[in-house]
Image (cartoon, rainbow, N blue to C red):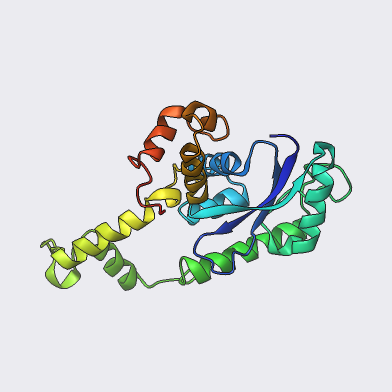
Length: 230
């Protein structure tokens, strides 16, 4: 692609699609998103990658601006960071003075840490930071192993209804763009099928996406991504 884009990342389960990270790329949004997910899976400690990991990679991207001149990408990224507000983002390096990779001040790091703790406490673990008694820890440990203190030594069976519920939850978590290894989004899949229907070859379509022509063929024939309609 010529030029580049300024993009934002947001959580798929956020109805407001609030942007949590602003970045720039010349590779295309879907490929850059796949790179972010890969870094998160490899245990990167950048705030954005920790957020992606906690979100089980259920994140997507939106194009904030298309920039024809790549030399202006950095300046436009700065503009968008200022517009959204640095305190509301997970960006660590902010080139406000034109110099990339500036380390945040201790005060800024403290604000970022507190923001992440608040997000984690509200969305993942409401008991974060609270101390549990020895009795509570013992009960949780026993339940996690499938045993209960009042029925010690006997495995608690999982009902058929509960098993089905867990299986359905697993399908929701690991299907399509929500899967941590997903390289495409549902919008990419729809666009691929439209281009194929218009007569483009799979090998030509694959040049614009981080997958090979064989995967494109599977998408077109609905061997893969069959849940995406139309």
